[in-house]
Length: 432
Ligand SMILES: [Zn+2]
Image (tube, rainbow, N blue to C red; front, side, top):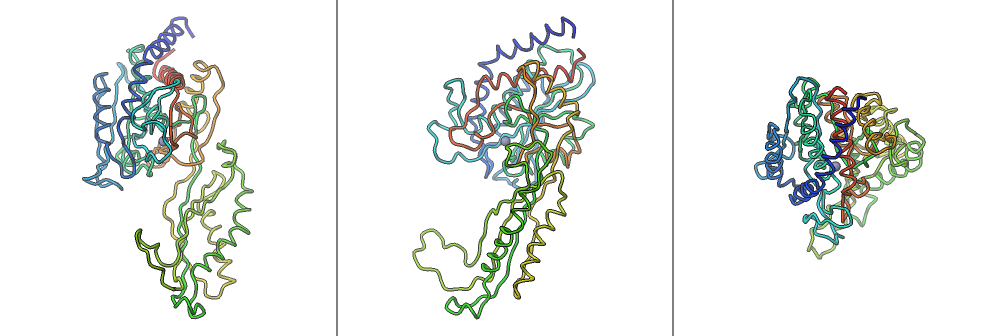
């Protein structure tokens, strides 16, 4: 590396450090938009705010409504923003994708979740960590990079997309379907989710949501022998899972570097079981009526590994159901897929991984930790619909704080990760 190069990187660092107040105010301004999902509100307003900021810095703005996508309606329109800054020469495009939606605040807050209170070097608020702090850091990084390297080649894009917390269908999935993540126009994607400033998240495990329904025969509750209880059939299914399936899943280990440790194996959650009459409406003070339930539904949330195929995952559950059918004469069931995502993991030698790992070494002074997320995020759509493999999650904040009361992001962490993002831009879009 030449001396001038080192000087330029130092200039970049200083430019970010001097933007500290701007970074804090930007984070607070983003937190002030109560973009709670569901139902998904304030999307247009936060996009307009980002458009004003980024167009003033020379970005071309596209506002895209996901018309007809799951969740989009005139009452709750799904708005997204894509801002693109062109360098002076042709080259590759680095894209930062952040979701603008947040989950509901819930109880237990000691600060106003939308005031962006600053104390002890932290900015507090719903979405501070997941992931408005990451969005703000990427904007500061991009602006600093453009200032210090005005002659760069290629393009920098920043998107603010909706609905990540509810599957991303009105956000990244829609944009990917419309070609916004076509590898012809975008070559590197960084998603600033809160994974800690020294960790690179390569991907996530797979997921299969499936619904199992057992059937019985309705009868008066005083003569259950005249009926057939669907809940007892489901009880037999759960017992068989306890006996065979859960222990088998615990034995399956993955070579994927999933965090936390407990997620380095296959897991399954029984998300819900509903049998019999629906729960009475609130305010109803009467008793239930005596009925043998003729239906019982269970929703399963199965998380699987690169080493497993989705067909095997489905067959395993089916095998349990068939074994129960062999033991219970009147057992009948149906199994329906609700939703599935294949596991994805970007290769460690992918260009964006190398650039960010080098930047972490130079800016933070440690080796990057490579991790895989236990749950999915928008990378699934970029990979599967967009067919773009050169994608990671990297951003400030502590994952465990996401969705919690008194969520916060550390200001030093945002500065450090903004330095890493800017350094990565320099590595990918300039010739050192
Ligand atoms: Zn998030």
